[in-house]
Image (tube, rainbow, N blue to C red; front, side, top):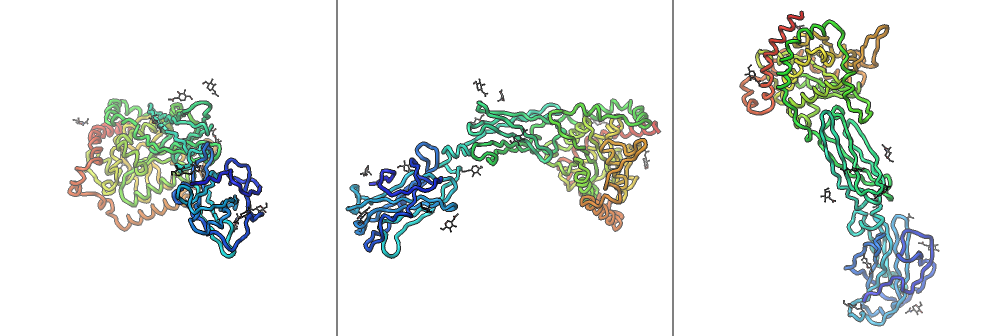
Length: 577
Ligand SMILES: *[C@@H]1O[C@H](CO)[C@@H](O)[C@H](O)[C@H]1NC(C)=O
Ligand SMILES: *[C@@H]1O[C@H](CO)[C@@H](O)[C@H](O)[C@H]1NC(C)=O
Ligand SMILES: *[C@@H]1O[C@H](CO)[C@@H](O)[C@H](O)[C@H]1NC(C)=O
Ligand SMILES: *[C@@H]1O[C@H](CO)[C@@H](O)[C@H](O)[C@H]1NC(C)=O
Ligand SMILES: *[C@@H]1O[C@H](CO)[C@@H](O)[C@H](O)[C@H]1NC(C)=O
Ligand SMILES: *[C@@H]1O[C@H](CO)[C@@H](O)[C@H](O)[C@H]1NC(C)=O
Ligand SMILES: *[C@@H]1O[C@H](CO)[C@@H](O)[C@H](O)[C@H]1NC(C)=O
Ligand SMILES: *[C@@H]1O[C@H](CO)[C@@H](O)[C@H](O)[C@H]1NC(C)=O
Ligand SMILES: *[C@@H]1O[C@H](CO)[C@@H](O)[C@H](O)[C@H]1NC(C)=O
Ligand SMILES: *[C@@H]1O[C@H](CO)[C@@H](O)[C@H](O)[C@H]1NC(C)=O
Ligand SMILES: *[C@@H]1O[C@H](CO)[C@@H](O)[C@H](O)[C@H]1NC(C)=O
Ligand SMILES: CC(=O)N[C@H]1CO[C@H](CO)[C@@H](O)[C@@H]1O
C-alpha cells in the first residue's frame, strides 16, 4: 500500500520565508531545524530506501508548473517496531533553498495488507526547470550514533524535455512554438521579393523577422494581435545582393524569456530561384547590327566629355529600402600566374577594406557562378552594372593581350592557371561580351582600363582599349578610385585627394601592404624567369584531357564569332583615327 503523504499527514511544519521551492497546494514553507520531534534513541529503525520504479519529475495536475514526487520505502526489518516517522529534506543546490518535512506514523506489521513494503510519497513539490535538488530521507528516531540517511540528487530537465515542456511556464518560454516558417521567393525583373509566413503563438505578441547576408541586414517587427499566422515580405533590387545565401530569422518575444528567446533560422539560396538569362549570343548578334553606327558614336565619345549615365540609372534602382549604396566594381582579368592571381585577390581586399568598395570577382563568387554558369554570370553582372553607377575594371596583362589576339584569329592560348581554376578562362567570354558594349558611347564611363606597371606593360593592353585612358597601378590608383566613385579628381579651382591611396602611402595599411608585397613577389619572379609567360602556356597535347571536360572551351566557342567583330572593330578604329 502506498500512503500518499500529501498534506493529510500529521507533520510538523514551520513557516519560513517564501521561496519557489514549495509543496503544491500549500502556502507554507517547511523547515525542521527548530523542533526535533524525536530525539536520538538507542533502538532506532534502520534507513529507508528509494522506490526505483517511481517516476520523479512531471507536471502538476493542472499543467502549470513542473513538480517532483519523492517516494521511499520502509525496509521489512524487525526494527520497524521502533519506527516513529520519517524526515524528508529537499535542498536546491544553487541557492540552498530548502523544504523539510517530518512525517509521524507508527507501523506494527512488516508488510502492508497487500504483502508489499510500506511506501510513502510526497507528491507535487514545485520545482524549477533546469535546477538540481538534493533529496534526503531518514527514519525517526535516529540512532544515537551515526545515521541511516539516504540521499539522491534530482536534476529537473529544461523546458526541452517532453515530460515538462507543456507546463505553462515552459509554454510562456516558447518551448512548444513551431513557427512552421514558409518562405516564398519571387523573382521579378531586377527585383527579388521574399515572403516569410509563420505561425504565431498566444504567448508572444511581438516578432522580429529579419533577413541578412554578409552585405545587409533588414528587419521588420510584427504584432500578433488576434491572428494565428503572420507574414512579412521583403523586397530587394538584385543589385543589393552579392551572395546567394540569405538567412531568415524569426525572433519571438515570449513572456518569460523576453529578449533572450530562441529564434528560428532558415537559410535560403535565392540563386536557385533565379531564371536563366537568355544567352549572350543574342546580345552579341544584336550589337553587331548596331555596329554600323558604332564608328560615329565612338568618334563622338572620343571628342567630348563622357555623358553622365548615372543619373538616369539611379532612377531604376528600387527604393524599397533606403540603403546607402556602396560602389561596386566588377574586375575582369586574366589568370596569368598564381602570383598574379594573388595580386588580384590582394587588390580586391584593398578595395573592399580600404576603399569600402564592393568587389565582384569570379573567384569570390563561386556559388553563384556555379549556379548560373560563366556566361549567365557575366551577363547578369553586366546588366546590373548597366542599370547602376557600378563600374567594370579591366586589368590588362600578358594573358589579356594574348587572349584578345586569339579571339581575333591569332594562336589560341591556354593558361595553366585557367585549367586549374574551377571556372576556367573567364576573360575570353568577358571580352566577347564587353568589347561590343565598351565601344558604345553611353557605356564608355563604365569601363576603367588599368594595369600593374611593375608586372605588366602598356603593350599588354588590347587595341580596343587604346581609345581610353589607361591607368598605371598603383601610381594612378587614386584616379581609378575617383572613377569608381564617379567623381572628378580635378574640378575647376581645386584638386581632391583621398588620404592614404597615393603610391607612396597605400601600403601603410595592412591590406595595402599585402598588395604591395604581392606585386613585388611577382615582379621578383619575373626578373628570375623572363620566360614565365611562355612557361604558363599549355601545349595542345596537354589539352587533350581538358577538351573533353565542359566549361572552359564551351565559352571559347561563343567567342569565335567575334572574329567578325574584330575585323569590324579594326575598321572603326582606323576610321576614327
Ligand atoms: C493492493 O494492490 C492492488 C493491486 O496492486 C491495488 O489495487 C489495491 O488498491 C492495493 N490495496 C491497497 C490497500 O492499497
Ligand atoms: C529554518 O528556520 C529557522 C528559524 O525559522 C531559520 O533560522 C533557519 O535558517 C531555517 N533554515 C533553513 C534551511 O531555511
Ligand atoms: C506524483 O503523484 C501524483 C499522485 O499520485 C500522480 O498523479 C503524479 O502522476 C505523480 N507525478 C509523477 C511525476 O510521477
Ligand atoms: C513517537 O512520537 C510520539 C510523539 O509524536 C511519542 O509520543 C511516541 O512515544 C514516539 N514513539 C516512539 C516509538 O518513539
Ligand atoms: C549552501 O550550503 C552549503 C553547505 O551548507 C554551502 O557550502 C554553500 O556555500 C551554500 N550555498 C549558498 C548559495 O548559500
Ligand atoms: C506546416 O505547414 C504546412 C503547410 O502550410 C502543413 O502542411 C504542415 O502540417 C505544417 N506543419 C506543422 C508542424 O504545423
Ligand atoms: C523591432 O523591435 C526591436 C526590439 O524591440 C527593436 O530593437 C527594433 O528597433 C525594432 N525594429 C523596427 C524596425 O521597428
Ligand atoms: C480581432 O478580430 C476581430 C474580428 O475577428 C476584429 O474585429 C478586431 O478588430 C481584431 N482585433 C485586433 C486588435 O486586431
Ligand atoms: C499576410 O498577412 C496579411 C495580414 O497582415 C493577410 O491579409 C494576408 O492574407 C497574408 N497573406 C498570406 C499569403 O498569408
Ligand atoms: C527559456 O528560454 C530561454 C531561451 O531559449 C532559455 O535560455 C531558458 O533556459 C529557458 N528557460 C527554461 C526554464 O527552460
Ligand atoms: C594600341 O596601342 C598599342 C601600344 O600602345 C599599339 O601597339 C597598337 O598598335 C595600338 N592599336 C591600335 C589599333 O591603335
Ligand atoms: C553560334 C553562331 O552563331 N555561330 C555562327 C558563327 O559564325 C559562323 C560563320 O561565320 C556561322 O556559321 C555560325 O552559325
